[in-house]
Image 1 (cartoon, rainbow, N blue to C red):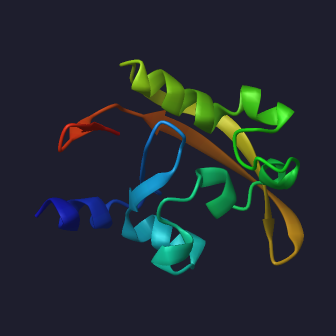
Image 2 (image 1 turned 90 degrees about the vertical axis):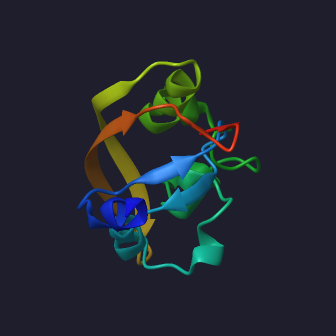
Image 3 (image 1 turned 120 degrees about the horizontal axis):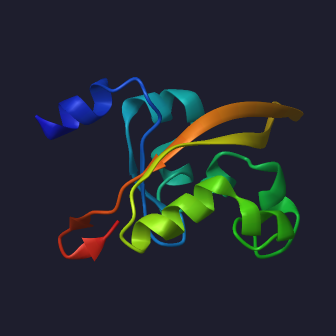
Length: 119
């Protein structure tokens, strides 16, 4: 039942670790990304979303100067400190079909444990 509810939500939902590596995602996220699961799972969010800043430095997502102010990464960090983040506005610059694309998002993050692993 929980997977059905997870996939029924018309929102992009990602379950991530403390480095924003995607552990699971729902059907809406799969449709948006249009990638094989092997290209999504265990990869950092910025790499999967083709964030413009994820390719600025060799370390990838989370290592560029821009990443210090990334609403997604900072929301995940706060969630891992036990805080719940609700609808923080952000602009995501990404590459799609070799063109720069800007999307606006409301980011929410909530911490939880699954099999004794914080997510």
